[in-house]
Length: 173
Image (cartoon, rainbow, N blue to C red; front, side, top):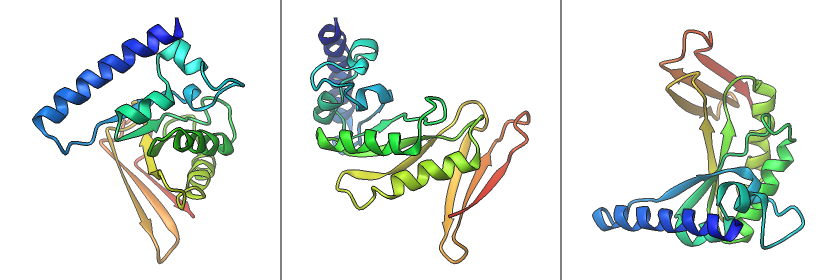
């Protein structure tokens, strides 16, 4: 079943990639993947991600220009090191990676900083390209700036949901 599911997903992704690149050959084709495929759970050939999502990280390396694992440590009740493990495995099987960080409630700034620091520690690693903030109905867009003079990171929510009450976060890094 897992091989069938990954085959269907891979064929679809390849068809999308080929169609997009036929129109604009230099377009970056990326995939946001569930995190379970970034860990092997004791086996190198069939993982939870293959069976449940049809996503295989080794196959993804042949399809996408880079992947973005949606490694929401808070949602998975995982430590920030879990994100680093997923990034390392992703690179090990041939991917370039932008790690997807949970940037929505109930995540706290302390959790977010832990995740940022876990990925930051990997940035010298070939293949780890950076981070992306994933949100869920709290705001439409986010602008992230790092101020080298003050050592702070600002995350400004643009079109923030009125229900969230949050428009801007400043984090000491």
